[in-house]
Each structure stands twice: as C-alpha cells, then as structure tokens.
Amino acid sequence: MINKKGAEKVLSVYWFAIIVLVATGIFIMVYNFYNYPYDVREIEANILLNNVADCVSRGGIINSEIFSGNFENDFFSICRLNFSAEETFEETQYYVSLNLSNASLIILDFEKGNKNLISSCGLEKDVEKNNLAKCVQREFYSVGSNSQSYLIKILTIVRKTEKNVN
Amino acid sequence: MNSKATILLENIIFIVLNLIFLGILILFIAKQGSGAIVLEQNYAKQIALLIDSAKPGAIMELNMEKAYEVSLKNKYAFDKVVEVDNENNLVRVKLSPDSEYVYSFFNEVFVTDFTNKNGYYVFTISKQ
Image (tube, rainbow over the protein chains, first blue to last red):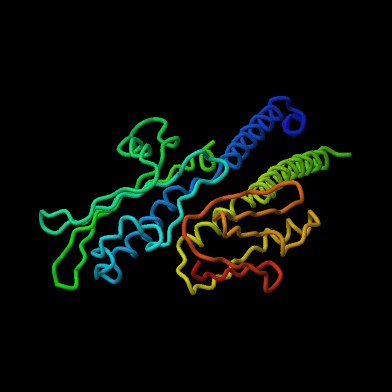
C-alpha cells in the first residue's frame, strides 16, 4: 500500500500535469511582467512639476523674473527646460500650464508644450487609462517681495506612451 | 531491495525532482530580470530621471554593478555602456553590441559621465 503511494508520487501523470501547469503559469506571469516596460511617466511628470515650481518660487519666495514681462517667452531658458521631441515621437511629449494669481487678479496664465495632451486628464477612471498621458496638478502659495501672497497652479503632463506602456 | 529502502529512494527521487523543478523556475526568473534588454531600459530611465531632478553643480554616483556584469559577459566595454547626448537630451544605455535603449530628459543641463571604478558611473551636472 505504502509502496504504491510512493510510486504514484514519482510517476503519476496527474502530478506532472500539475507541474507543467504551474510552470506554464509562472512562465506566462514572468514573461508578461518583464515584457511590459517600466512606466515612469508619473514620476517624470512630478519631477517636471517640481522643476517648474522651483523656477517660479524658490524657498517660498516668488521669482522676481516673473514680473519682468518676458517670463512667458523665456520660460524654457529661465526654467532650463527642453521639450524637443525624441526621434521615436512625432510631436512634443510634454505639457506645462502655469497660472499665477493674486487674490482675484490673474498675473500670469500660459501653457507650453503639446496642448493635445490635456484631453487625457480627468479620464483616470477609464479602463485603458495606461494608454493616456499622465497628468499631475498642484497648487501652492508663495510670497512676493512686497509681502503679498500669490496662488500658483501648475499642471504637467507627460505622454511617452510608446516607451512606457506596451 | 526491501520495502523501506524503496520508499526512501522514491521519496528522495521525488524531492530531487521537485528541487530541480524549483531550481529551473528560479533560474528562469533570475535570468529574465537580469537580461540586457530589461537592464538597459531600467538604467536608461533611471539615469534620465536622475538628470531631470538634478540641479547644476550636482555630482551623482550610480551603482551599476548588474550592468557591469552583463557588459562583461557580452564583451562590451563598461565605459561605453552609458552615453549622454547633451545636444538632443538623450540617455543611451548599451549593454551589448547589438542592443541599446534610449530615453529622453527635459532638464536643460550639461551632463558628463564617466566610470570611476568597476560597476559605478559618475554623472556631473553643470549649466548648459
């Protein structure tokens, strides 16, 4: 009786079927896991937002260059950003919108990059959300040299879907 | 051979087969995770994000021991593994002569990269 049980453990077709099934399952899982690219778009959008925030307000004090009148035109050189597209992509994969207001008065309101990406924001609950661009939005207050407080709203979007989603 | 010895032998075979099976699975998983293509993508994105978050004046040392091992295995010089294209804002990671992964960064800085010891890369960030 015991011998029979031992023989079954080694030779049973059923046992090998289970082994093959488990191996196939693990193989598929591992293959799928490593076949998907690492999605770093949200981290990238956060870093972009932090860079813009640091450029607009350093240590809680607003950058005086904002009031020079050329901030919008010189945004890329002042904030040291380069949105030029990679060869893989046909158009710019980044978007930034900046809104600076004091009480009810809007001082600065502009957007840079690919405006078509805005349509991706607010659709996070959709099924195929990974194929959409990643949006990060933040609001904070900063103090000007005249001790006035300003509300800064920044929205950054990173697409790069082909490099981050299968 | 008596029945007790047979049971012991069968159990040993059973355990050995299971260990071989587990070993093959672990090897497969480890090999998948340390493949050149996966590592190239991993390092290229990691370096691009590091550059994006860096300020001029920063010096960063990145542990790339896994990349070092893979490049040695593929007979590819480790000092050629990472290439930062400052003109087009691209990070290019190459762990074998036949493959590479490119990822872009948006921070307009000048990056120089070099290896100071085996398995490590140093990135210095300065104004463009």
